[in-house]
Image 1 (tube, rainbow, N blue to C red):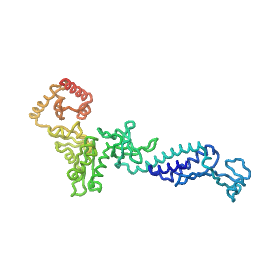
Image 2 (tube, helix red, strand yellow; image 1 turned 120 degrees about the vertical axis):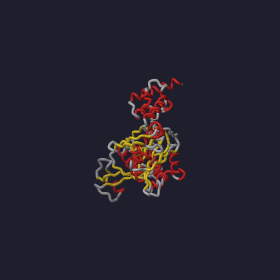
Image 3 (spheres, rainbow, N blue to C red; image 1 turned 30 degrees about the horizontal axis):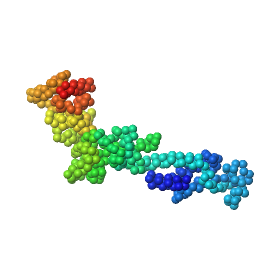
Image 4 (tube, rainbow, N blue to C red; image 1 turned 180 degrees about the horizontal axis):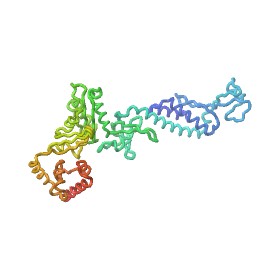
Length: 416
């Protein structure tokens, strides 16, 4: 068993980072407990393990008596004095035993107990090693998939990258290296579980902190950030030094800094804008090149209504409302976007012309067509990728939105 113990000590110390002294104490307690339940039941034992060679020594703790009634726990005074000349009745002495006397079952039980304690040590060590790294970026190797999760080897522990924390479109095969944010450590029945993320806004924030020295030293500050993982991120930055352009610092010379982050994010687009405390100024900055017009602010409800001209409407809203959603999250205000109202005569003529794009779709009334056109959907061809929830966001009821999607789909199929 000595060689086995030494192998366990060396492995756990080198590979798992568990101190040899802690392992020795656990193994000695396990062996003593197993032996006292087996062939040595009833005996008080002392176990020592040599930390250098794994050598095992065992002693039975026995009471010195002049008349033995329990040979497992007592020793006659005459035998005791052969072991220790100073032995006296009523004292206890240590009688050395051969390790084999601990019993085969004790050895097997000890091995099982040792493994249990090792797992417990490892659980505690995982928490201690990683509790201060929560919110930092870690690098690991993808090992396998388990129930939809990616299991990532971080070196001293394995971590989980759940489906909800992955970026749409990204896929990793076993053996690939991956960088993630250590999102949190969740306690489970199996011990602490390390949860990773590549979809969190905190991941992008941390990438900028590592890439942009001005952010790390506090000159430039990330004031707000919004993200749709895999598609686009908007980030608003400020500078405490008037000589430092916060946007330029984040972009870097020839775009080097932001390009590095875009590569890490698999080509995800990143918009970096200057931060303003005034929500109107911030709105104007965030939706460039679109220009907000006729702005109305509801401070109590944190809502902004504004209009943009027809050619900028699709830019302000974005594909499937993406730009509007990201801008809303960046500002922390709800946004109501409408097309700029123009003079009646000119407007009516243009609207009538635009509505003609919907004439071939059966079931779409002129009123519905006009509303769709006002929101940038000027024909069935521009409807590509639009779903019922997108129509609900611009004011249609769920039933109307679903009906419109069905009518447009039917029109497309009939023309194919």
